[in-house]
Length: 253
Ligand SMILES: [Zn+2]
Image 1: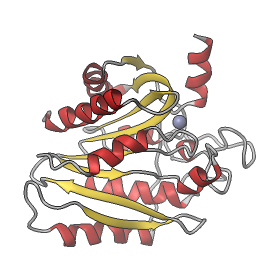
Image 2: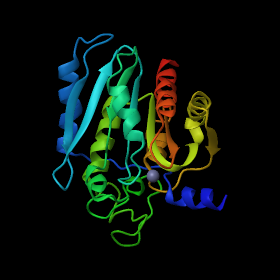
Image 3: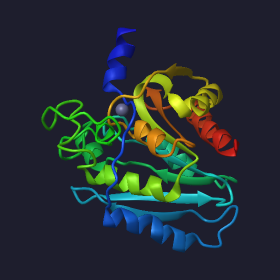
């Protein structure tokens, strides 16, 4: 339980938001809309570059599926040292399901390249959103929230994507608490995901500045929650369960 408490603080909690604009981010979804017009079920996946990180790495979304369904957004990783969810994202990219799937395999490629939780500027991207954002600390502190909400390109780009596609459900993968963390309007979707995936629901308020916190405030009719995968890589069986859990949620109107 001590582990859980540590994980919870370290973890992954909520999110917040700010109204700002990011030209590169705005361009991505717009481009995707144009590219996907007229698409129906089983349309071929499209790769959309949403923008670039401060380190120059592309932030990519894959849009696949049936646009007549409510959009579901999956983010494989936001912390660069918690990458197990990237496998779920990659598997979902390849699925021709009747869902409208938006997949961002890695929102923090600079951190992943360094093996750090933070991005390349030392900021915890899941503390950089504006809902209940709380400043303080310095770069490379474990939970450093940045100098201001949405100070980071990655969070601005993700915010622009979410506001553009307005996901019915957003799933954020983290590690390593081995729970589904949901709160507020996201609780029922989180509970369903936990049931599908065979995990425990951790019903706990969001932490300051987190992505899920932000979406819950900005789009209260939608759900956004955190899946804290166990440590290590997913087994084939677990990967399959998580893919099925996302698809089951997507099918739930
Ligand atoms: Zn995390």
